[in-house]
Length: 426
Image 1 (cartoon, rainbow, N blue to C red):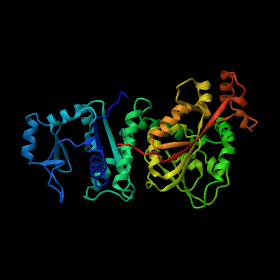
Image 2 (tube, one colour; image 1 turned 180 degrees about the horizontal axis):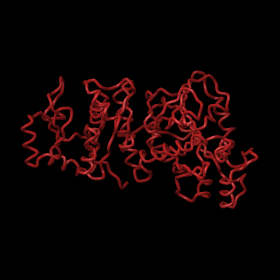
Image 3 (cartoon, helix red, strand yellow; image 1 turned 90 degrees about the horizontal axis):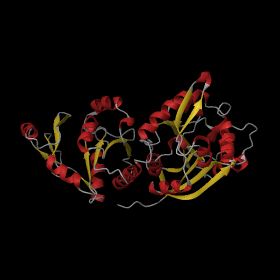
């Protein structure tokens, strides 16, 4: 592992749960997380001890800064905040210690320059009714309207319906997965931006008629989805990620379930023609933790990245399933070459749209799933023999030709069924 998080800067609206999250992390993982010694000119709140701040006057904090004893001197919500330079330097040299601190996002880049590349910028969000317990709503809203999720390394949905311990453990998993996979994937914010731009461009042409490869993929996986959907229970809460053109929801006989879906752009949400749609990134889904019976995703390759898997784990009930199909690595490698994780849609009038497309070996899927808190229930490959369409995409015929295989024998779709339940260790 070449990346080590030495400093985690936590930002988010006032009252969203940042301090509670940090307190819980330190309580559950005391050998891993530590607050830096900090100074502030604000008044001590009721019931607040001296574990986080040393309360001093404006003149005193300015003098310490002039003497070079502080790392920073930030002014926020009418008060000064600063960290002790000597103690922070010592703590960051500790091999296994992560310094964690609530810092307004406008100062995250400054902290990154001070702490180096091993600093993680985190945005903590909440469900719609959460936040603003200290009357900072207008100031907070103005700032966060101008600064989105794409500016942060990690985004976490703090759910006040869940226990403090569950929130801390969910965040810990997400952070550890980020640390362990940071050099293996592009940043989630980069993935989301490219996908949002690409799918906004392709939305109007994202039909079964025009997207022949997508239609072939659907056909190969049709029998699998038919058998799985008919096994769902009446009343189950089911979330579909990235419904695309609505094929999965609209092409099958579903039992009476509580269905909702989420997509990254309003354009794709309109195309899918599905009810109960949410516009959100898969890295931060505004749904209560441990509330969903099943998450499904057909052709999840654009967003099958670690932060998404951790977020799905957060919202699923214990031992619930995440059911996914992906384009198969054998097909992808023989079409576009190994370790190429983008695909381009050719559009009318000579235009194009590019999005991410992640494919994996069985070993990679197993390792990633376990890291994100899942066990593998099923991992199988569907080949071209499942194709019933009279029109075969050139992307499939070309891959078969490059693999020196008949289309019937070429692996085209990977089917993954994951069960939530692998314990995390501190």
